[in-house]
Length: 136
Image (spheres, rainbow, N blue to C red):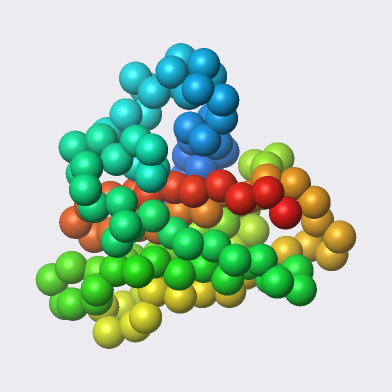
């Protein structure tokens, strides 16, 4: 359990730090060198250019629930490990882990009345950590 707490805390902190990646271009330019080729986005796939469509989490919001899907094939050798959701103030909301035989789809209920930006990550066992942001 201690390892899970460490991973959850680490991912929440890293997601909070990476929130600026989807910011205005000037802010993104100032932060890109520190996170380039560490955190990947649709607009900054780094050395994984061309793999965005399979790794960037797709998010829909309905009735106070985030529905996250990563359109990635799942095999024992190559799969999506998890989805993590962090609210704009850095609060960890939830994490769903996957086995290679699962579909990389998850649901994350938002706090009642939540309005703001949410950071969602999708982690691939071979192609690292992909991030997207949505405003609710």
